[in-house]
Length: 91
Image (cartoon, rainbow, N blue to C red; front, side):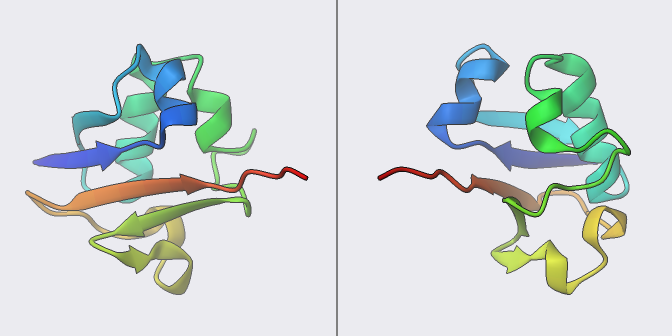
């Protein structure tokens, strides 16, 4: 089932400049794994060494923060939209 995965500009650079990617999977973790396999330079920015989400990278599934659901175990369905928001520090 196809979902839309949207990246901020800073991360899109690691996905060959693509800010919107079509992917599939039954859970958010499946989708992230598929994208990580397709874009190895992006992989370490999306998930930690155990395959889980970083606390400073927020994933929204249809505008709902997955931290308040089941994290990467959250099911996805055809047509869902996943948005990645990476915390950026500055000063």
